[in-house]
Length: 435
Ligand code: HAM
Image 1 (spheres, protein in one colour):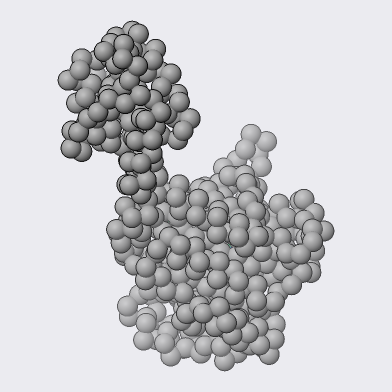
Image 2 (cartoon, rainbow, N blue to C red; image 1 turned 90 degrees about the vertical axis):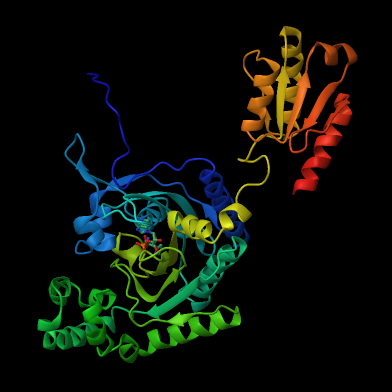
């Protein structure tokens, strides 16, 4: 019996392997480009924070904080948590670095792993990734809400994500929401016995979350409940109307969804979610909203308002793959596919020449595979095929003597002898033709 241990990734946690990782890189790259054009800059945040930061901002009674956080005691007995989301960290950093003195709105984006101990399924993981952005500043102008959403839709367009649907809502503010929640609670009490266990519990803890329920038999009941739109205060109503008008000005199509309340406590007024096809039940590819009180709640200036979103990168990539966009938008030739050049060399003298040539080819941007040991001709060219190289460039004694290389196009076997400058032109032309 062998006592070899075979390790596996922890449940709900996965490796992202090539060639899929190339699609991730591309998604992140396009996000950086698009966000950059809207004046956003990157913030890199810690992966863990004091537990209290999330309890305060996301909310102690939310599923995320009460059931899903990876929390542990540090050696000094303080409680630390792996971040379940990053808005709290952005706000903490904003306050810690006194960013309210910066001119205009502070626009930050981030990308990286988040951790929630949810039940794993397609599109739902315990370590998942987000690409998020936040705008912090003194203004809560509806034009900011609309521009943030515009940026998001622009990104999805650039990535050729098809079938994305934008849902929006306003969940009111400290002035109007409590009264609505009480009305809702009262109505829910009346139908209590018809509700499932989760919803029954939420009548006390957070009646708004009942609206999120996916339970089939609760749908008819929920449809008859009072709607927040009818209970918004005048300021929230005006703000929401203006957000919609501003979206219209930008040509952004949206659906109003009065049941979109979101599962984090810091939201107020505008909330939004985007769904994408091919994801099954976990179809929210992005969620966000306004959180004007959060900076103050975490000890910063009361005048600072905030709005932002986070895209679930795993789900975005999944949806692109399901639509076949993985191949189309993913991997340009030579960038994660096979190498441009397999540099076959035979003999010690040829190896030295091949190493030099390989360096010059790589400097020029070609993807080069250079065997590390001297292989037999058949074996070497066989490997070039299996690696899906576009060309084999052969350097042997004959070539060395003649000051040329043999270049073979592996798709059709055509080959010719070229001196180095011609080789470069030939490869450039081949690359241009394949793009
Ligand atoms: P959230 O709705 O909790 O919002 O998460 C945003 C997105 O992250 C979701 O729409 C989903 O695509 C993805 N996501 C969440 N949990 C998982 C999971 N277990 N597995 C895979 N993907 C997941 C937030 O996190 C807020 N911080 C967004 C925000 C930023 N609001 C304002 N600023």
